[in-house]
Structure formats: structure tokens, C-alpha cells
Image (cartoon, rainbow, N blue to C red; front, side, top):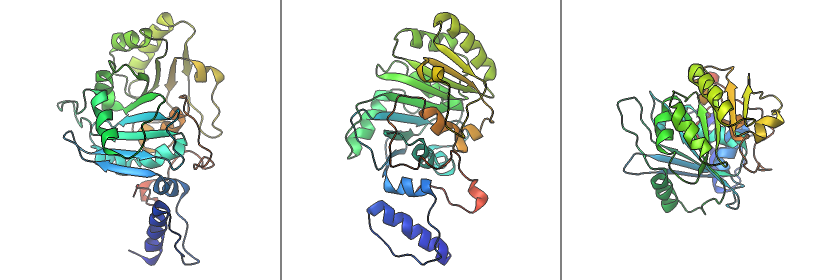
Length: 289
């Protein structure tokens, strides 16, 4: 490790434990997202169903806070997704008051869903961490093959928000039944590889929920401006301007979609940083510590 890299790593650790460490004058400060992750609360939990990663921002407080459960897609596992997709940094960019949970999930179609009951996952997490459980919304977000896990969670009474990152693979009847069973329920879906099924489901939901479905041809990131209708609709469908994997990895769509949900924005996060993360091979180690 170079002197510069060692100094940068030392600064991140210092942020995590609240110790001020003097750095050489030429030491570059860590990127805002890396600093925000280190300043927050982090856990890596062991469970019978595999590892679980948990992160909450430094400004977290339980009153009205959300629980955001993120489920990775196929051809990866939660260790790799947490590290290479830099999930904690993406959650920090969202700049919202929430506890973020990333459990293990199937890496392929032949693997069983690891957590068929969402209540079991939440009980496992909040039984292990020393953080007061949030009182706000429960939000499930998943990429691609995560759809199988998300479908299994639809019977959890407190789940009122589901966000599909290119994870709408049919099952229109299930999603329509879930949405129409309660006026509190919301679905956000982004379609790239799944655009065929997203279009079909959006058409069905326009008929089932008249006036409550908004379709966007893109979701802007530069100025964080979205149509007012998308902030109040029960269903938002985004025709993605990004490819299947960048939706989960480039640091723009995940925080932007979380900002559509009714979660308090925190004043002390890296909100001035533009959405997006540099490529992992760009010389910046964005992996969470």
C-alpha cells in the first residue's frame, strides 16, 4: 500500500471512530460518499441464511425513519454486490433517514429464496444490531432476479413500497392484487430488459388504478427534479435510459428512486455530491470499509 493510500485509509477509519488524525498536507480527502459511509453505522451479520449487511447514516433517528431492504440479482452474492456495487455509498447518496439492509438472495433460478418471510429477516436484523428500530415505511427494492424474493414478501402487512430495478418479470396478477388490496401500497418499476412486462403491467394498472399511474420516459439526475405527479402517484414506471447492470451499480438510479419515497431527507449527508459513482477501476476505492 502506498503512503497516500495508507493515509486515505487512516482518514476513513478516523471518521468511523470519531478520532481526528493529522494527515500529510498532500493527502487527498476521501470522496464524500466514502466519508459518509464511514461516519455512519455499519454491521455485517451472520445468519443461517447467509450474511446480512446493514448500514444507517450518521444522522439516523428512529422517529419516522424507513427500513429499506435491498435484494441483489442473479450471478452475484451479497458479499460481492455490497462490495462491487458499492451499496453503502449508493444509500449514502440517497441522503435519507433509513436503516438499509442487504440480505443474501438467490444467485440463479435454481437456488431457493433465502428469506421467504420478510418478518423473519427484520427480526433477525433488529435482534442483532444496537439501533432502535425505525417507525416509518418498510420499502423493498430489488434488482433483476430479486423479483422472486420480492414476490414472496407481498404478504408482509407492513410492506407498502416496492421498487423494481429491472425486476418486473410478469406476475401482473400478483402485483395488481397487492396494489389494489390497500390504498397505502406503491410500486416503482424501472424497465430495460424487462420493458415488455413493465409496459403490460403499466397498462393493466392504468385501468385498475385510474389517475394513479405515472409513466416517465426517463428519470433525471442532474438537478434532482421529478414531476410532481411522480411524487404522489401510487405507481411510477420509468422507461430506463440506462442498461440493466448500471441501474444497480452506477450510483444514480438507486438513490434517485429512494428519493421518490416518503423518507425524510437528512441535512448532513453528501447531498451536494452529484448522483453517480466513479468506475471501480478509476483509481478511487469506493468499497465500504
